[in-house]
Image 1: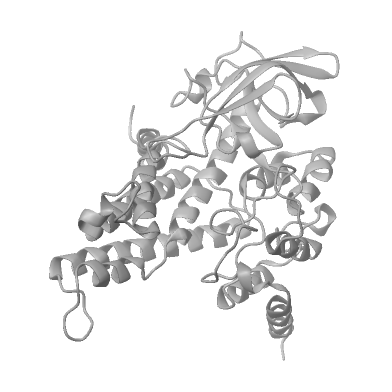
Image 2: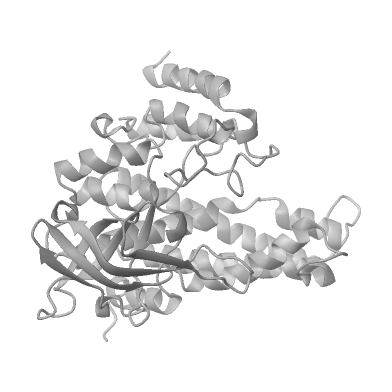
Length: 401
């Protein structure tokens, strides 16, 4: 038996013995898990001995919440082949991720790439163990699409920077412990050159968070107000006035993460199951509407194409290629695909897809309606679709301004 086969057998046995039944896809999830059963961690998360917390602790002890990160920073230190085996065995046993969040998908990879030793040793082990939850402070009321036009200001005061300004669309800021953010540190430089990338503790005077409710009735988004908030000079990543380089690198990670999240969130049989229930079936079990069958087949093929392309990109990343402007293609395509899918699903439900609350609708029907409304925001978060198309035109296709 090869070393990799032995590793596979070990992983399979360990996962089977240690992943709680409630933390497997398709299992009923109780109040111990967040929303769909995925655990985000952080100091504001429930600390009771729940299945989700138990699963996190077990995986983090092996570094498998971040399997390819170096062991020196709490990661698993696995090779790309071993990490692939771990992912395959988790899918085979339908194990949910032990931990999700911007720490693993955004700020962690950026610190590995650009952080100094003190920053990596300080923050990465906490991320792996799920002890801290992160949010992103980029957009501002007057600097969303034009991110480089941000006005939040940081002024040096001894060993600290004093920050004043406002951030908006700060996902999960009300649940987060730390925020990675862009601030202006030199207003006299050209707007792309006077920006710095900083890490700020949210639990301090001067940081105020207000949730923003969307048309769907709920939202992860918040406004974040900074009034004389303080950031240690040790928590500037990449050097003063080098924030735009950090921003571009992190946006690549974010857009890849968003496209992967859309790609992985769908139940592959959901459209077919809904069509059979609300439209009916022909002999042989086919959906009783040829045009609808074609639309479902097209969406399924489009999703598979995105899935395969993302897999190629992930393999390239393991060889050292960092996400570049091509991440805008993934984000834009995944956004449109998710919007099309949610619209088709509500259309399949017919009148049952028009419910908001009250009698006459079951929980799944109401959830689909709200998900369809929520999907409208996909074209804004992580950079608007218009911005993605501009990046594709200029930096991928090389078209003139």
